[in-house]
Image (cartoon, rainbow, N blue to C red; front, side):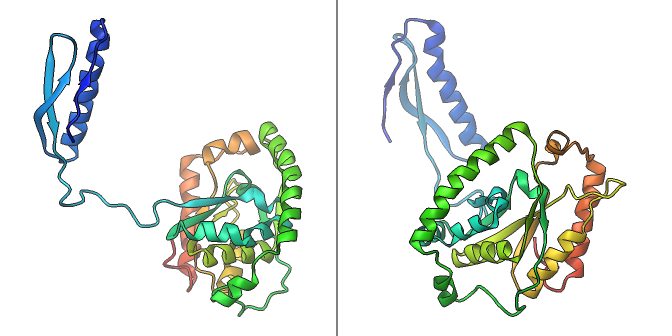
Length: 271
């Protein structure tokens, strides 16, 4: 990679910019274990020049990240009205999402801390969204998809108003939301992370885990493999809900979530 860069600025400070940039690059490569030699011509101004060559050792990786590191999210606002969860059945959306796999799919955001699981108890516990035929049956018809998209544009205006005012209403969701979300993640080849409501608090400001236990029991009955997240941006609780949770109490809340997972035969090894 032979390249000569020329700096013709008349100012001394302008002439030093390339040199400072070069030093920064040099320090970066050195700190990451690359071999750096001086061999390339780099003109600093009309009279002085620095010769630097950079040799990158590509024989081995110094650091690696988990294959699912680059991941995606579905904002919990989609469940503001449960009918919008059917948009996850869009064949085009599933095809595009599948191209990102393997990855995590996180369901959460500001509104996850205002969502309450309200089961209707109408499902058979042995129904599983797993095989390819089931995924095809879950696809959303084009006409219904277009109608839902138009309705969603109107709903977005209301949700945006809530964001501006930081006044969020509680959202009740049923097994339908969970089923459609898991179907989307599973059929797209992603691992689901479900965001739990951390603003369900007792009079003593302790996380009330009963609703999360009900949700976890339902998911376990359906054999839905997923991970769990507690709360979204706890530093914002006071602004958006008038509730302050200090670090010590937040830590105890996470311990309670871990205890719930360890008590479960299905989720004791989940993240």
